[in-house]
Image 1 (tube, rainbow, N blue to C red):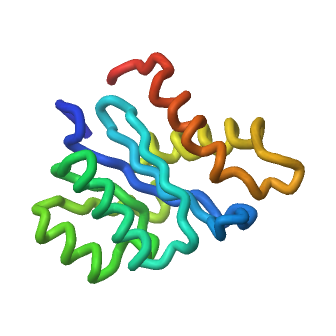
Image 2 (cartoon, rainbow, N blue to C red; image 1 turned 90 degrees about the vertical axis):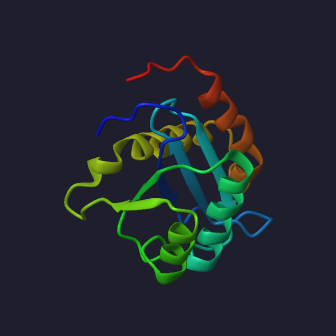
Length: 148
């Protein structure tokens, strides 16, 4: 897929469940701009369609609309609620196949990078990862990126 400009296509994915934090967070929703590799990551309590949709909508209104969103086939992404939101916002939703997750490979790499880096900072109980997530994302976003 040829992405020609920033904020044209976002890859979305979930990390988790992770050890529950003191703030009741167990998941991370990741959003990766496939052109610039810019990452947004939001700690979440659950991966329900309602919570995922709320985070997606909030981030889109905060950072701007995109033309296309790519996700896996998880029911938190492929649901009537997201269908309505994406339709209302005129966003095409592409779903990667179960046997070919590389379709959303950039976000998969983002997730691996986040998990690998978080491991370096968490406490012995691994339950403070949400406090370190902003610094990890900042590090990813300020590292030199190679544009494809």
